[in-house]
Image 1 (cartoon, rainbow, N blue to C red):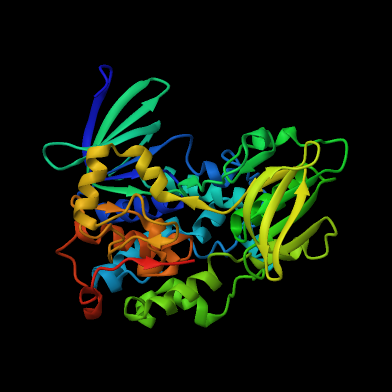
Image 2: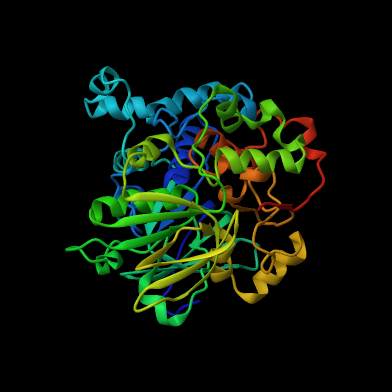
Length: 453
């Protein structure tokens, strides 16, 4: 513990990151406390400022990108709290309505205009402002701290201890359970050291991309087939209008389906008995509806842009090309191939486990593996066992990682698909006296690790 560290009152829950998931949880805690089901206390630790990634203040996103889902799927959606809390859930949903997208737009006197315009897609920046509004209103039992989490440990009372560094010094906060939000750190992208200055990644800052020439066309390779890749292209098209883009995707480009049958799986995975489905069925659904797909509004924006082209192939090597070029080796449907570009952006995704490895010391990492099985050095694509409350199965005190729950518990937990359901699942262990019970089959499934491509 640093000498200058000062204690913060312990909370029931510590959340790392003040984004959409934290806003949803904070809202439910505020309402539960107001309804007399508390007291529940939550500490949220944010390294920059609330909703920074949505506002264009963190990473490559400018905040101008269109939101992939309708904002009507707000922090309370799908408003079916009775499934977790029985009859108490109806009052909980009624209180959460005060934090809805509709109430936010009404408070800004923009609701009628938005409806009359056909409820158009909104920007990431607009959604970020909504999240800031939510976090400013959800105050009962909520403490928001600004600082960078540097280390996580367990104390003698088996509580999580979170060390935080801020501009005003360092401090420590404790909690009975820990929720990790955010995308994690960008996946490793091995490349020759000689081309490092021309290789960027998912969370490169906009100032890094200032190295791309502004006064002439340049050739940029974007490696990845999901939202990170599309966000990169959308941002760089505006940032460097003369640039040309080649997007390398490991499979044919797909757009996200938005039918009722698909959407209901995001909203309520219990309706299709998600946990009872065989691993291959779950894996295929996630792959084709969430991972490795582009949202239709963004895809339509580049559909007829001659500056953008797609190449189907998996990049296997990045090295020096002729002159100052970067050479990509990739496996295409027709065999091995190669091409050269001036710059490369790694948009192959983020790794939440890498973030945990950085925060947890060796002893804690060993203890976690002794409880949940091999975790830290597993092959890429191995899904960790996540329980119904979005917790790492077998670990006490609870370590809840919603971003890793998509395959085990339902695809909506890894994104914005069901923030209200996510918050209910996270908070359920704190409210054992409220009604409602999980489906019988959920407790009968054996713990298992699932593998995805």
